[in-house]
Length: 79
Image 1 (tube, rainbow, N blue to C red):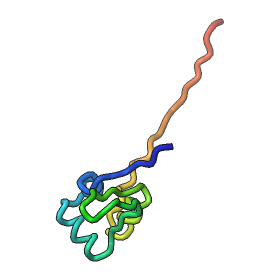
Image 2 (image 1 turned 180 degrees about the horizontal axis):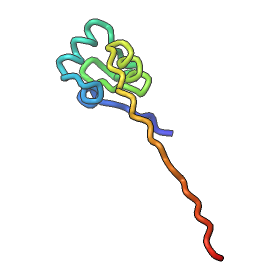
Image 3 (image 1 turned 180 degrees about the vertical axis):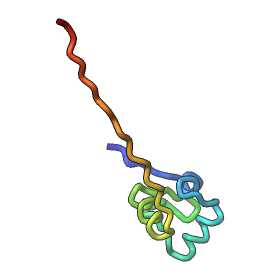
Image 4 (image 1 turned 60 degrees about the vertical axis):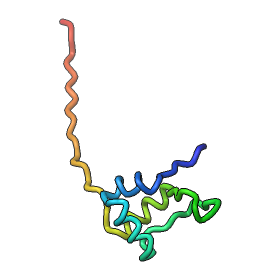
């Protein structure tokens, strides 16, 4: 199974931050990438676990969706 990866820009978008705010959180150590990069100039990618940890560290948990109610009716046909 292919591992899902987020770029810095996409992770910032999902968290509701700007790229600059994400970079500041990285400097503070609140957000870290667990996907190793090949060098200092390589793009940084984040995994789903990184997203979950960043949400907890930055208190950016998404709102709960309202519960749906469904009604099922069964009408008997015929005579």
